[in-house]
Image (tube, rainbow, N blue to C red):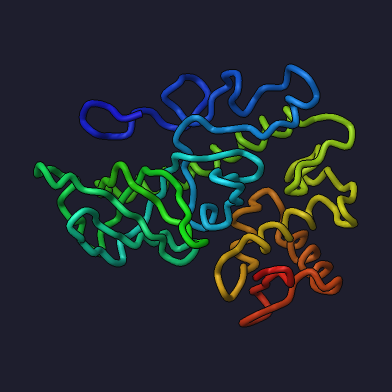
Length: 270
């Protein structure tokens, strides 16, 4: 995953093992086998580019994390360091990508030898972080195995495009693996995914309404999730469709507005 110079080896694609999502058995695309195997949750074996908001909204089951029914472990984020604090055994950063509150990123240092991992990257620096998603006392954080300052801000734009591409591949392979009559995942994604099909009701909600409700339920931010953030994550759903889903969920008592008419929180939230 890393080349000899300590840089990221390979982007996100389907052509080789160095990239993100692959088509290998056990990856996202495994449409063969029994129906039970088709419905088994997929798992990403590679580094997955994500936003902070996606990581904070990831569903945790036991010791695993899932984004839209795909289990993730190693991820990359990109953002600006807002705070850095060095301790004898680790460096704690707060990395902000402007999609949610800054995320805690902890990098363990080798106390026996001096190296680049022992140098504190100063606040105000844009960085790319690769690490493992962890949760302690219901607070998610990253344990970083690599933190690299950006050399060019075009890398930030590339990262956003990688996120879009990666999750399009995720959605495509997941829906093809689950494509069957009455095939719905727990996240409310049916045989139409985000596209505009999949209008059959799940627990009294359409696929679109279920997607919106699940994102709002998993939002850890006290003021709830905004319409703009919903649009960012549901990038193939129109804003009018999102607003219609929000209005329906609000009228049915599933969600409520918080700081203003653009932020919503689930009535089931802790």
